[in-house]
Image (tube, rainbow, N blue to C red; front, side):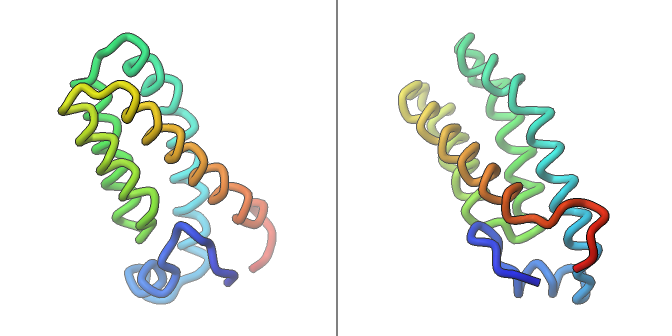
Length: 116
């Protein structure tokens, strides 16, 4: 399996007992889950509903931790901290970085159904 910049592949595979096919399915699911939640997160940020945004960032952070997506985890951690402090500019920067990492992850994944 190819390296993906925002994933610690060795750790992710260790957590899934070396099952690359399972890792790909989990990563595809993670990307789709983020894409479905992203508009809600953006709305909460726009509406200054930081408590709600924190919940979403925390959920994504947990999913990122499960698949050793360290860069994504770090973005969510920073976004949570920025929401707690109410720093809108930094929340937006963190969310932008998170979207960038998720796009990179999506682009790095082989199409679903293709062989490894």
